[in-house]
Length: 595
Image (tube, one colour):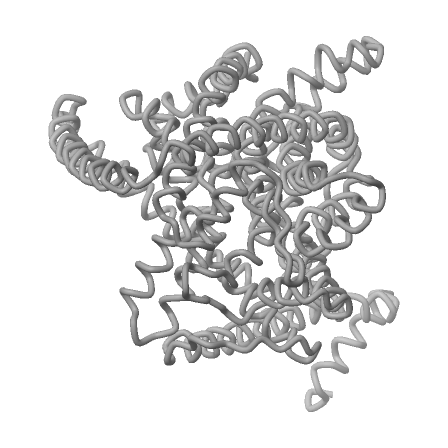
């Protein structure tokens, strides 16, 4: 008996204990399941490494000035891979910028007004206005490598993604409950510890849902970023956006269908493999004392949590790094108690003044060059630009009103019902990510048959491109409402009107405001495509500021492009100062969660 294998001995032990074989078999399967999960994670890692090698070979190769795009479905997997990589890198860059910019703007009293004004201006500048400077600079930096065009495209996608994420993180920091900040101060949290354990978790829900709509916005402008004309130069990058733009311009319905199907498959896969697990993970950060029985769940997140490799990775890397960081901060504070505020402000004041002086020099030089360039704009063109700004403003207001009317009730319903969210979230993600410019030829034909003009079509395209900012922010706001408040409303038997007036609208108001602000900037941004559209050999236009920016970009008239961009920025900043900023102050004071 001693020479028999251990498995026989363990089987005899199970029989003696009376354990059924089926139970033992299920336990063996449970023990082997993490091993298969580790294999899946390893395969994903190998696939990612192979993708990095392929991208490096393309980017470090010679530039491809005359790219001939194939409309064959066989080329779609390669084009889709290139576009996904560009979108992913642009999102990572956007996330880092949003967290850093929002943090400084929220906690720097001296720079807050200036940084928020700069954010208002930047979000109002269309992608095509960034295009000449970004692409020419990147091509000049990397003359002999393809990486110049690639980085330029990534930066352009970044300019279409980042602003609402920065606004979301900033507004979350400004609405932090007072008791949480006081608790972090009592326990002596350092800045890093407070950022990692308080501020990022509290802002997670809003930041995640704004990330989703940012990625959707990136898909919207992908067609303009991967293929465009700048004066006499034609820039093209192989990708899904350039594929769809080529198909739309040629009126190739079959190619448009295959391109949209590929994009929908990517969006569904991204939702199931990325956003759904992240949303389920962020549900733990809701600010509430009564836990809801209806939680957002993700099978993939549960699988990853059971993986031995993922657990070991957390124990070996993330946990030691955070502990080392917190220990270093605690040791520094304990060994240098005399390091008071005065000594801390001294070096920062010097660097602040030096940075301010550098900014003033750069801004002054840019202003002189801009004034020199604007001298070539005649009076008639100036009047045309201001008249176009008024027409675009009217379309932006109509698009925002229409978006608010349906997104608020729909977003609250999705945020309050996890079962509905499981169905509606992927559908909304698909609808938000599918570029309306790819569907615009069909919409134009339908509208023209009903007798509507290009002006109505422009409003519709603005609505399709910007309503998702409001919807996703309302969903985030509804999900962030503490379950305590819902239980109180249920116990006191509030009517529907009372629940909306006392719980729902105050709870979602900061998120709704963030969505409206970013949707407003997105609507101005979308006007460059909505008011100036190429269909086969024809260019369909309607009078507006976006139309003048697009026409000036095509013609290489940089003076008109600069003046139109300045007017658009001034319009957005003025609206933000007169309307959105006062409402934002009400949101961070009157509708702030806290005891």
